[in-house]
Length: 410
Image (cartoon, rainbow, N blue to C red; front, side, top):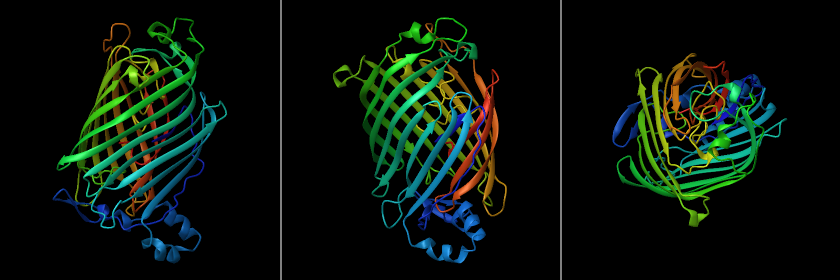
């Protein structure tokens, strides 16, 4: 999850609290759907807590206690600043665990975050991916409570910061989907989705032009309530930090008035990810991520596809959340992940992405908005192989800033 997206962000404190488990997924040879995967055993590397305990002179006691628990917990408190939000305090936690004693299913995780800033932006978010019964079942949830002043810039990827329209709203989100495996690594799923925005207000475009929000249909509240049907392929063993494998998800969502929606609308979301391990002697990874997000007429403005509103708010590094918005969205990103220190404590990334969103009212793709960047990785928990990710991205129209995440971006 993206912890902070801002023009200027300073990470003040980061640490990890650990209750260890022996992680079969991170052994030097792990088994996944009948395939042997060569991997560096990250549980034998060093992480941030190891450095703290060594500094405190408690390394031996810490190592003795490291095999007694079943849950890995990583916590990252951060303090940041942006021109939009002011000073912000954020705490993000990641719980990684197995749902059986044999550890023969994928690593499950629950990611939660709470934040508050000096311009009244505050939120609580909790998301989970839980695997059960030899990977026969998977449950995914996304729950949010937000009070969110944010800038919107109109529709399409050809907008400028002169069309900045500050808006404020309260937001309740609940998504829940249950998947059942029907072939190795293939799943069918069904669930319920709710997006409820209320007390929506806007300031108007800073350049005095009529905001696209008003052209599209401004409303002080919107409710989208419906069901989703999913097809999923997932051969990743550890979704927190995939070393190889692939992920493909196709989600059809239908919002229905008898379930409380203001209007009938539907959407398709195709999400594709692929990971290539470049050498048997390292965990260096070349990763690719692509999305195609298509929505119908009648989709509320704040539910339209936009930069950084994917499940973990990670798309579009180099741009503020909501920088580009449209009825349809195409997105592509590639990242090279590499180690810096032999003990696994520090790593780095190079990334490039591009997105294109349709304008209004023509609903045509106009241009691609590219971004590039680099970042460092600090091992937060070697047993779940989770990293503190600190990236700096550059986009067009003078967009740039820090992006802080707990766990890999995709």
